[in-house]
Image (cartoon, rainbow, N blue to C red; front, side, top):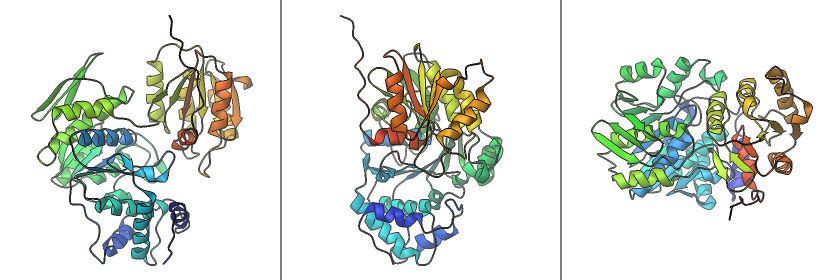
Length: 441
């Protein structure tokens, strides 16, 4: 059995264990989990929320965590991927788990797996689940990595499934239409347990799966709904109502959809986890999550967003359009090669005036030169805006951002997007010092 003393050593070990990066299925995981703790296995003694979907998972998890903590509960959260440091993936009461403690749980997985090969995600997920199971928590929130039915997180039986927005992504693993993808996402549901779908127009396959399974399905417009104006909003559903609430602390119109699903999930489990209305209000108002339409103070305006597929890009465009006028918008863009890059570029092209394409520190990423070539191919006919001076390539997001800052006027806007890696690399170092906004006398 291998034994290491640092988290970096364990992560390097995990990267070398399995012949492929993604190998969906739960059989190997179940075997290893059953061996842990001298055969006692993995189990949780508190309610578990499991969150799946194409976009909105991270925001949903953050809102749940924030409200439950305001309600006085000790929370555990598993989310992925991380932005800067791996231990961001496992939080206890909103604090990343100490690396030394996390290493102990990596060692427990290594001892239990024997000769069973696990992927990086499978190994690390088992370690984090083990850490959460041993932390004496009041509530656990688990974010699905990809899909749902065969994702490592689905090893744990949930007490409340939440399915956020559904769109097309990871087609080589999940399918190339919303109905097929919906079946994979619905795999986190359990018989007799609440299943909240926050997508206002969910695939019919999700509804059919829930009905066949016997899950307690919660749908927008049938079991809960929202209303509001420019100042406040309200939520109502199944015997519970919240009125005159401030909008969620996370920016963007899509966050109201996520918040509605969160309130439905908390209402569904109110007998086990009662939450005062004031905790709901404070939790939603104070929630924070880096990289989700994150605004960095100063001039030029800096927006960080992990939008990494066409659906998320469309939401980013809508949020950018809702902002005030900016003379020029500079776009720092790095993305994975397996995404629908043409669609992302076409969606973003109308709102980006100057592009700064960047390499990313992972073999999965498209090169900056490749992004430039795709942009020139797919966007050349859109208003005749493509000229070489409007696009440049860089070897890192930090270099691309520095170039954008140097080129931008104080009244301009810079948007960093395309991948967790793109935003994470920018956040890895202290953000460039932007000038303070001018305040008139």
